[in-house]
Each structure stands twice: as structure tokens, then as C-alpha cells.
Length: 262
Ligand SMILES: NC(=O)c1ccc[n+]([C@@H]2O[C@H](COP(=O)([O-])OP(=O)(O)OC[C@H]3O[C@@H](n4cnc5c(N)ncnc54)[C@H](OP(=O)(O)O)[C@@H]3O)[C@@H](O)[C@H]2O)c1
Image 1 (tube, rainbow, N blue to C red):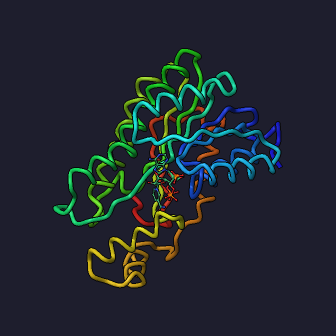
Image 2: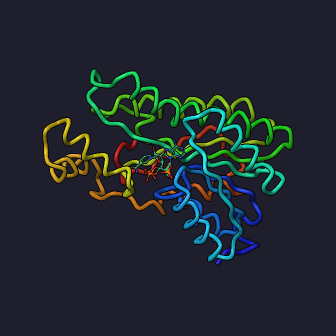
Image 3: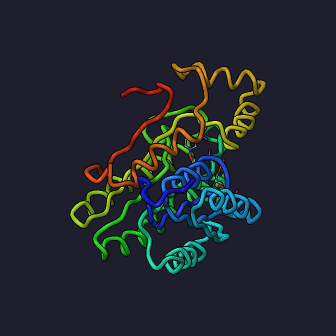
């Protein structure tokens, strides 16, 4: 059950992409530690369902439907999140999309869509959250980047490009707001067992291999030999939203089953 003396007790927390996968796990982990949760995504049924799960843990929740690819909707969503509990303490930029293809096969539309959701919406939400938190002198921003934001990977260049941008904006905002009481950090997960992994199917097709073979190829790069559970990412997200991480900013925490140790 949610607890009012939990690690993020009473923190008004926004989770984008809170309708499923890692975002859902982050919302539930924050709820267990006493936070109030505001969920953002496009699928209303799934948002409603996660809201119910959060409330079943004894926490309070609300949501708004927002297509993050649309800048006007992002600004409107921020206003709703802000007025819900008259302030925001933690902002988790988790929503993201994947598009795997060989480098030269991306169309302009492919690039545009990934950049809008993974980069522009995160940048805009950070601008709005930083203004609010900076004026108040406290707040936490947690960005879900990826190992793809720190290193190269085959056949997903636009995804890697977008996640490198998230790492870049995390560090720059952290520097500008370090003395203003706002912590900005990122988590860089490796391979997590969510719907996003089903996009391996697209990569497999592009390479002309079976999905099972593709999964084996991918897991051969993971020393632990397994996909991560979304809850494993959520634990770090709670740490970064809590006072336990007050001295940490501009960091990119990798959790990847040992894939990439540098
Ligand atoms: N799974 C992995 O292996 C992995 C590894 C490293 C990093 N990540 C990152 O972790 C984050 C979460 O990924 P996941 O694995 O949980 O993916 P997922 O299961 O596909 O969930 C993606 C979430 O983003 C939301 N979303 C997507 N497009 C949106 C849009 N245009 N507007 C609003 N919401 C949108 C989805 O909600 P709706 O469908 O309701 O819109 C959903 O809640 C992403 O940033 C991803 O890049 C994932």
C-alpha cells in the first residue's frame, strides 16, 4: 500500500508514457512510496487502468490523454498536470518510441516522428518543468534515455540519435539548474521486457532473420543473458525522485544486465 512516510511521500509526480511498460512500473513504484501520480499517454483505456492500479495502492492518481508528438498538446498537458495538485515535484520523461532500420532506409517521416516524441516533447516538458521548479527552488527531473543514448548500436540510428539528445539535454539542464535546487538525471536501460521489445520483429525482418534468432543475437550481448524487468528501472527512478539523490545531478545511470560497463 502507498505510504505517507514513503521515500517519495506526498511528491506530486508526473509520468509520461505511464499507460504501460516502464512508465506503468514507475507509476506503481512511486505510488507504493507515497507519491501522487499524474499519468500521460495516448491510450485512455490503459491510462484508466493504471490509474486504478495506483489508487488500489492507496495513492491518488489522475491522467490526461496527450499526443506528445504535438507541441501544443504538450503545453496543454503541462498546464493540466500543474493545476492538478497546484505544483509538480517530480517530472519523469519516460514516453518514447522505437524505429529500427538500417541507417539509409529511414524516411524523413520516420526521423520526424521519433524526434518529435523522443526529443522535442522531452525538451519542451523540461523547459516548462524547469521554469516551475527553478522558480520554487526545488524539484527533480528524471529522463528515461537508454544505453542507445550513450553508445552505438546497429540498425537503430534514429533511436540512438534521439536518446543521445536526451542525455545531452539532461546534462545541460542539470548544469544550468544545479544551483537552483533542481536535480536532472537520466536512466539508461539496456533491454527491458516491454511492448517495445516486440519491435525487434521489425529489425529481424529488415535483416531477414527469424524473431527468435534476433532475440538470441541481441541477448548474446548481455552478460546476464536476460531481459530486464520494468520494475528494475522503476527502483532507480524512485531513488532519483527522492531526497536520497539530492547530491546527484547530470548523471546517466546505466542498468543493462552488464551490457556496456564503461
Ligand atoms: N524496453 C526497452 O528495452 C527500453 C530500453 C531502453 C530505454 N527504453 C525507454 O524507456 C521508455 C519506456 O519504454 P517502454 O519499453 O516502456 O515502451 P512501451 O512499452 O512501448 O511504452 C511506451 C510508452 O510511451 C507512450 N507513448 C508513446 N508514444 C506516445 C505519444 N506520441 N504520446 C504520448 N505517449 C506516448 C505509450 O503510451 P500510449 O501507447 O498509451 O500512447 C507508452 O506508455 C522509452 O523512452 C524507451 O525508449 C526502453
